[in-house]
Image 1 (cartoon, one colour):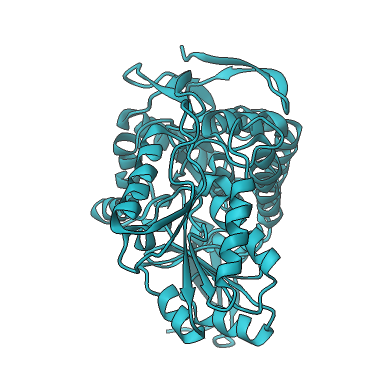
Image 2 (image 1 turned 45 degrees about the horizontal axis):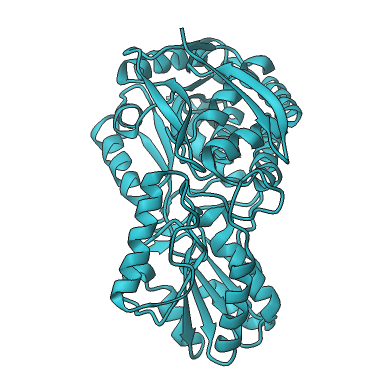
Length: 500
């Protein structure tokens, strides 16, 4: 019998008691894992255990895949009209809205992000995403192609079948919505693995999925480790597609497993080292505010974080002065305090990884303008950090740190900065700050990135595609573009009169 998570929140921003099963969600039921083992969930503010959740195994993946296949062949897929799928997804949206504060509190508890950001960005964005794709569910259509008068030729965009989805710990609920939305809208059934660091909102969502009335087996969620559950999903012979958000290193392993098994379709949203370019004519106050948001939001644990900040030489010194002051003003502390901007890093592993990059920067000769050390003595808090006097070959310039660490680099002109900005294996996002519209657009077009922001950063919408160039991924999340990740196109040729 799976354990039950019971917790009383008594914080400045949320007060309530919550209680729900923490088992694996397979075929509409909450179950223990096959080995009856559990995984401890850690509170990143103090390093203490919050609760334990059931640990999935490859055997459990087999059970979930079988349940998903049964649902696809009987109650979902082509057996559930798009209008019906839309109704159930809309019911789920209503339940998410009803439980929005609880979802935000759970996100803050095991991830460490602030309650206010979780409520207003993560939960709000997840709700918007599911609502958006609920609208698409009965609008996934093919085309009629004109060939000859004695022939009817058309295409069908059919659901793929059972799809595997592996989501990260930085935006647990939001990434779950990004994956569930288009997959459900197109009629697929799902086997999903959340991160073992941040499983609580995913498990709570399973209760809402049942309450909304989804048929058993349509959505299955297995908590577990990447080398077991993640590997079993990506190499499973009965999973026809796998979608993953996370590091480029793990993305390579998933792509390899998919190729070595049944050559399953793969969508990858991976790492980044995004450039943020600030020209002399930028509104400097706005550039400072957006740059701070770009690198320090979500504690720097954002794949599109603007971690390389290029500032033109005419305003470099003034920008750095103001940017340092802005960084100093950001409050680091309790995620449930109303004025906290940055909580702890998600785990001790991530804390140590970020601190090793900070030490690498110091050892290589970069200058710490502010930060560069842990915050407090308990938990996994790191002070927002700015490096200057960096060299392009330094690890802190080239590699994704995934923490509150940015580098400020002076540049001369447009040609100089575009060359530097594109000097990376990544290509997820980029930003340009200038009041010259022609320069803004020309620069955005020349940057090798899947998303280019002009006079803003980290601005995403459910109807606008998101994904990377180069080693930042394959395929696109969000918008109409994401639907193509979850359909197979079939061409049908009907002979109306041609005789042999």
